[in-house]
Structures are given as structure tokens and as C-alpha cells.
Length: 240
Image 1 (cartoon, rainbow, N blue to C red):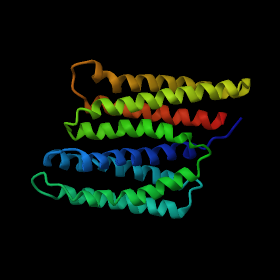
Image 2: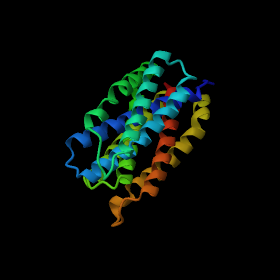
Image 3: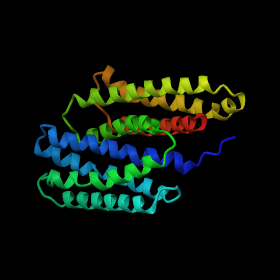
């Protein structure tokens, strides 16, 4: 039986997914034609990114990640918190300069590179893309954005990433047909499929109805998809 550390599986998803989501939001802030109110609301919701980053940092202490990378991640997280405090003190829906927001990409990017360097497979990027996409949409919906195209684009990214994940998982299981290995991963597979299909269903539901995006519904979808991607990565590491 292969011993898989809980922290080594969870930390990459929790560290890299918010960085991917943050990169999407920075692109929207730079290229999106946003009114001042939308600009301010999106900046205000970035506190979610900093929170998830700090959770990953607390767990990263239990991994083999160098203290140097953890220190840079802490700098990025603290910088982000200070940005949110600054933005929260501005009156009349004003926004802080976007260049100040972009500055967080450097330390968080270095932290992400450090995390990637400790992984046994680059396939960790697939669950990162799926989880990062739904996290980015969650923040946009909470910020009451009006960029309708992203309500379709981000779920499509999630579906494509999920399909690729299923294909890769299928090939991995086909190449490793050990009975003892399959017995070890069977419970994770059941939970993975359950969480994934329910999470994707909730995420995609507004695309097939006339209902507006619900922050609560999307929040539940984000949690379920996060769990499913952690389980997928655990299985991939075991069979890899």
C-alpha cells in the first residue's frame, strides 16, 4: 500500500488554484470594460484569494517545501491582505490602482513555482485549472459582475479540464491493473465521481435555465469540485 501524505496532496491544489483564479481576475481587471462599481467590488472580493493562500501556507509547513518559498508566499499573502484593507477604506466605490494588485502576482507566482517543483507529476495542473476556474467565477458572481461571457467561458474550461482528467485517469487505471492497487483507490474513485458530477451539475445549471447565477449555489459547487480534484490528484499520485 502506498502512503500518501494528506498535506502533499491538498497543498498543491489550495496553493495553485487561487493563483490561477487570481491571474484570471487580474486579466479581467486589466482588459475588461468595467464600471467603477464593478472594479471596486471585484477588488473587494479578492480577500477570498488571500484567505485560501494563507490556508495553504499553514499546511505547507508540514510538507517538504523550502522555508524560503513559504516565506515568499507569506509576503504575498500579507501584501494581498494589506491591499484589501486599503481598498476597503476607500469611499464611494473607489478602487485602488490596478498596478498595486498586479504586484501580488510576483510573490504568489514564486510560491506557486516552489509548490510545483515538489510535485511528482505536472498533472497537478489539471485540477488546478478546474478548481481555479470555478473559484474565479465564484468571486465574480459575488462581486455582481456583468461580464456575461465569463459565465459561459469559465464553466467550459472546467468541463474541458474535467474531461481531460477522466481520460488521463482511465489510461492510468488501464496501465496499472493490479488488484491490490485498484482495491486501494476504489473508495476515492467513488467519492471523486460523486463530488465531481454533482459539483459540475450545480456549476452548469444556470447555463440551462433562466435563473441568474447564485453565489450560494456556486459556493457549494466550488467546495464539491475542490474535494473532487483533491481526490483525483490523490488517485493519480498513487497509480503514477
